[in-house]
Length: 203
Image 1 (cartoon, rainbow, N blue to C red):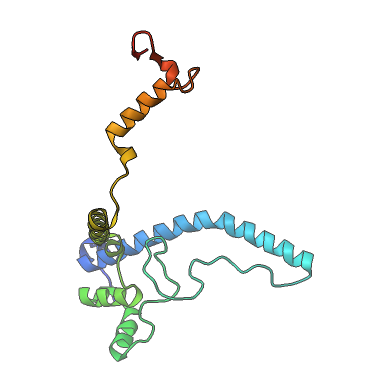
Image 2 (cartoon, rainbow, N blue to C red):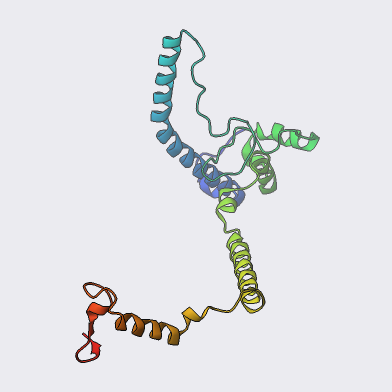
C-alpha cells in the first residue's frame, strides 16, 4: 500500500485519533515520572534483599515492589497503566477489531479507535480527573449530622437535663466574693490582696 509522504500527516489524523494519542502520551509521561521516582527505591530494595538472601543462605529474598500486585484492573490517576486490560475476555466483534488493529490504523474509524481504547481502559485521564461532586455528599451528610446533634441537644436540655445549680447564678457568686472578702481569704496573693479595705474598693 502506497502512502503519500508529502502530505502533512497531522491533517490526515482524525479527531479521535489525536485524542487517543494525547491521552496515551499523558499516561506515558506519568509512568515515566513514577518510574524515575521508583528506580532508586527498587535498587535499594533489591540490594537489601540480595544481601539478606546471601546472609541467610536463601535464594528468595524480599518480593519486588509493585503498585498492583493482584493484577486487577483499576482506574487510578497515579497509576495510569494497569497491569491488565479493562476487557480481558473478547467476543467475536472485539476479536475482529483487535485483528484490524494490527493493520493500518488510518483505516480505522473514530468509533473503532474509541472502542479499542475502551478495551484497554475504562476511563480516560480527563474522566478520572473530572470532578465527581462527592463534596456535596460530604457537606450534606455533615450538615445532617450537625443538625441532628443540635436537635438532640435542645431536647435533652429542655426535657432531660436538670436545672442549673444555684452556685451558677450571678447573685450567688457575688455573695460568695463578698463573703471571701469579709473573711480576708488569702490576703497575700489571693482575692483579699486585691481589695482595698480602707477605701472599700478594688485596688
